Image 1 (cartoon, helix red, strand yellow):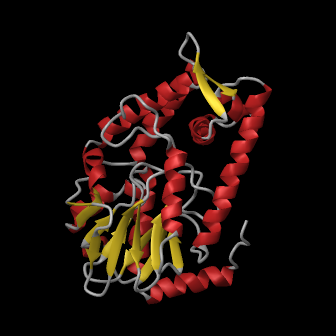
Image 2 (cartoon, rainbow, N blue to C red; image 1 turned 45 degrees about the horizontal axis):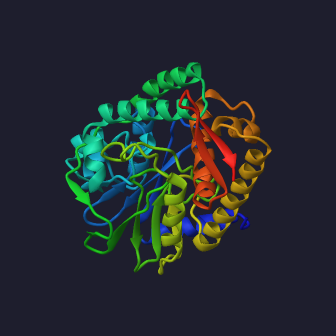
Length: 342
């Protein structure tokens, strides 16, 4: 894996972004990933990219961070939401109502945000069905459903006033950001490219300190004809597209520090996923297993809250193996899927 950037390098990259009018506001979250990076773009219109989770602690931190730059919530004129996860959208409604800012997101995400509670419930039901099909017990799935209902409070519905399509430009007085759809980590992931300044705001599409989990998610707009989405396959395609981009000198992520070696990082992610797929193939070659059993072999008894993340990770690599003709999925009489080496 590429050597981590030094603290000086990371600070130099933050300073370069700040000199271009893009400031990191690191907002606390209740999640294991830690603080979320919201990005304040000092231009006309004054723009905030992502908002942090829906909590008083996060709002207080955001207000203090804005004040450090001589701004307040009421000054915001545009809010851009990078994707649908709770730590990125939670305060969007509160901020929009207080500021009157326009709210921008991927156009396909707008109905999901408007129907947040209903969509989250449908997503939880979808996740429960996937867990059942892939070997997770009913007790665990019920417990996770209860946890998910509690966690839902960290998010919020939002009214999108401008839906964006892949390749569309967000124009400012002194810059243009082009939005690109990069699904995989979630169905709605988007990135923003300031080609003139060499800046790329990637949210959770690429993170240096951890690999972005291609979470198995219900497709935007509902289930895709009953077929399970292939999140990792989609994510690898998205990373290839990002790696091929020109004019990327500084990458500004949704968590952790900025970096300047996106191409090398993508190469390492591809190697990591290939290694994991090979390891899963070896486990399945020993004997048929469910995806949940594979996860237990890889990581042992994980925390309850991590069960679905682990299942998503395994199924993503299973999709690669099935695509390459190395593994097949076989459903038993109870509707549980077992993995068999070809």
